Amino acid sequence: MQIQQISVFVENKSGRLAEITEALAAANVDIRAVSIADTSDFGILRLIVNKPKEAVEALKAAGLTVSLTSVIAMGIDDHPGEFAKAMRVLADNQIGVEYIYAFVSREHGKAFVILRVDDSERAVNMLRENGITILSAEEIYDL
Amino acid sequence: MFYQKDVETMRRADIEALQLQKLKKMVDYCYNNIPFYHERLQEAGVTGDKIKTLSDIQYIPFTTKDDIRDNYPFGMMACPMKNIVRIHASSGTTGKPTVGVYTKKDIDTWAELIARIGAASGVTDEDIIQISFGYGLFTGALGLHYGLEKLGATVIPASSGNTQKQLMMFRDFGVTGLVATPSYALYLGEMVKESPYPASAYKLRIGLLGSEGCTEEMRTQIEKNLHMFVTDNYGMTELGGPGVSGECELRCGLHFAEDHFLPEIIDRDTLERKGPGEVGELVVTTLSREGMPVLRYRTKDITRINYEPCACGRTHARMDKVMGRTDDMMIIKGVNVFPSQIESVLVGMEHVGPHYQLIVRKKNFLDTLEVKVELSNGELLQSYGELEALQHKIHDRLKSVLGLETKVTLAEPKSLERFQGKAKRILDLRNEPEE
Image 1 (cartoon, helix red, strand yellow):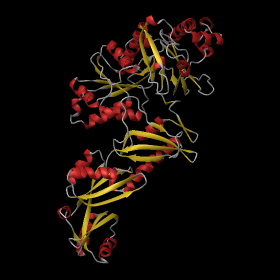
Image 2 (spheres, helix red, strand yellow; image 1 turned 180 degrees about the vertical axis):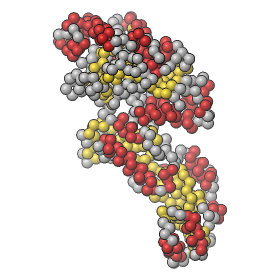
Image 3 (cartoon, chains in turn brown, purple; image 1 turned 90 degrees about the horizontal axis):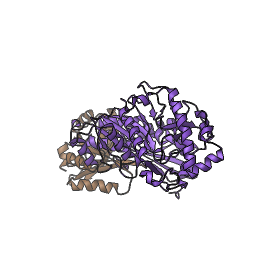
Image 4 (cartoon, chains in turn green, cyan; image 1 turned 30 degrees about the horizontal axis):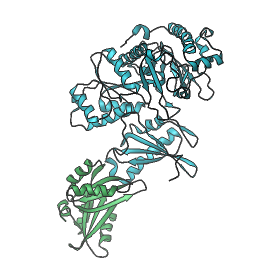
C-alpha cells in the first residue's frame, strides 16, 4: 500500500518550477498531487504522478537531484471530523507524521491525504482497522 | 626515478657553491644587460663580486609584478630579439599580460626541468600523455609538452575543451597520463564516471596537475574518479613557466630545481628573510635564464621551505604545497581567508560535490561570505530537516576552520560553473552597489 512519491531539490530561482514541470509535461507525466516546502534558499518539491519511473528519468535527465520516497494515501469522506478521526488513530498508536498534503476529488466525493509517517506499515494497518480507506498505488496513479 | 640523478642528488654544500657562483654571474648579467636592473643594482650598490655568501642576496632589491608590468613588453629582456626563439605570456586578467621570452638555451633548460618533474612523478618513455592545458601563450601546455617529449613519453597535444573528445582520446589512444589544471581534471573525472564505458576502458595511471592550487582533499577526489596517481608542480610565467618545483613520488613537498632557481621565504609585511620551515612569501631568483632573468621575484605565494634531503634521494630543497596566494586571500571582516581553507572543508564531504563558489558581499557596511556548494545526490531529500542539518554541518565546520560566519547555500547539481583552465571561484561584489 506504499505509494512512490518523487522528491526534487529546487533552488530558489525564478522559473525553476516552470522548468521542472515542463520536463514532466514533455515526458507526458500527469501530476496527481503536489506540495512544496521552502526556506529562503531552497525547497523540496514533492510529487505524486501517474508514472513515477518515467518522471524520475525525465527529471534526472534534466539534471535535477531526485529521490523516491514511500508514502501512504488515504481516502476519507469529505465531512467535518473525518480527518480528525484518522489523526487520532495515528496519535493513539504513537505514529509520528513527518508531513501531509491533501487534495479533494469532486468526482469521487472524497478527500485524499498523502502522508509520510515514521512507520508506514503499522500506520496502514491501524488506519484500516479503524475503517479508513488506504489507496493502492494503482488507485492513486489512475485517479 | 631520476632524469638527472647526479644534479638532483648533489650534496647541499655543492648546491650552495654552485648557486653562489651562478648568482654572482647573474647579478652582473642583469646589471650589464637590463637597464631596469642596472639602475636598481647601482642604487643598491650591489655587484657580482660584492656577493660573498648566499645570504648577501638580501642586499639585492626585490622585483615585483608591477616592475615587470611597467616594463611591458620587452623592458626586462636581457638579450637582442634575434637571440629570442619564443615568446609566452600570462593571461593578464588584471591588465597587460606578463611576457616571458626564451633563448634557445632557455627552451632546452626548461624542457630539462620538466623532464625532471615528469621522471620524479613516475612518468617513463612508455607513457602516453594527454596535455589538456590550453595551448597558446600560456606556458603550461608547451612547457609540459617539450619536457615530457624530452623524457621520451608520447605526447598528445589535446589542448583544453571538448570534454567528450578528451575522453574519447583517453580510451582510443590508451592514454596513461594527464596534464591539466586540477579543476579541469575534477570535471574530466566527473565525466568519466558518467560515461557509459567501464573504468577498464581508461588506462590513466598518472596525472601531472598544475597552474593552480589543489588541496589534498581535492587531489584525493581526482585520484578516486580518474584512478590515477597525481603530483603537483609549480611555476609561473615570470619565472619561465612550470618546472620551478615539483613533487616526487613520495609527495612530501615540491623539489625546487635548485641549480636553476634560488628560493627564499620572506615576511610579506616586514620583507625580512625567514628561516627554513617558516611560513611566508616565496621569493625566487632565476640562476640560468638568459632571455628574461629575474632577481628576487616576489611570487605572492605563501609556503615554506624544507632543506632536509628527501627519502627519494633528492637533495634539492622542498617547498610545501602553496597554501594560498596573497592575491587570492580575501579579507572578510578583518579575517584572512584563503579559498583553499574552504575547499578543504567542502571536498570530501558527503552529499555535496567538490565544486564551489564563494561570493563576498557588503551588507550594511559588513562583509558577508556566501559559500555555494552543489548537492550531489538525493539521499537527503526524504526530509527537510536532513538538508538543514547538512547546511548546519558545513556552516559549523567552516566556522571552526575560518573563525567566520558564512552563509551556506545548497545548489542544484552541475549548476555551478565548470572550468577548463584555471578556476575562478571567487565573486567579490563588495565594490558593486548593494543588492
